[in-house]
Image (cartoon, rainbow, N blue to C red; front, side, top):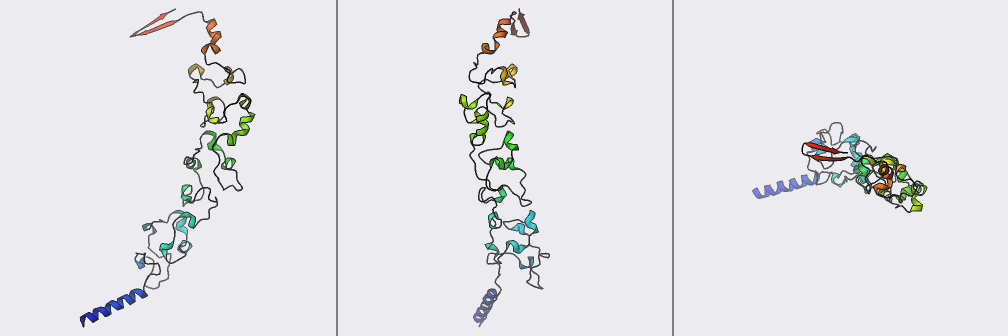
Length: 254
């Protein structure tokens, strides 16, 4: 008789469980009272105490202003994807990948750190490149499609290369890799923007006017030998000064 009683209780429990199965799916393990009241199963977004931070998708920024059903289109909550692309239309047309969070935050779609984000690419924005409008380089049919572009200098600076006359880059046969002679961190093509590592412009040679040494438009015709520029200094030198530096004593011989 006792076994029959236990069997009946078990059957009743199974029937009750089947009739009260959560419409949110078997994977949900939260107290119903966090979202519902004893008065009604109707969900009231103003009264619920469920903390979404306890899930894998904390509700912050603009997401906090949304109605639950705008994302939870199905009562089976485990079927709701958490990746950006599932809810947001990709206006960049797959040119930047599916992860909106690489550039955007949940607070706003406005991107204010383009230069820093660009450091993650093969072409960090330095010098003058950091001041250029995105669409000046990413030229496409829309202003929001940022298709990958050729990072080689000549792909954007062909006109600069061909129009350069002092020196004449094209006739002399200069490299089309601008970074060979020009610093990517510079704001201009001249002066401190020139890579002069083959003849360091230091101390007295630290000049910004290239024409002081380069007298012609062919910048290859100058010798690095001192006498090439300092013949006049050598000829006019009349006094020889020799300085000896010894411990605690300096000898000067004229």
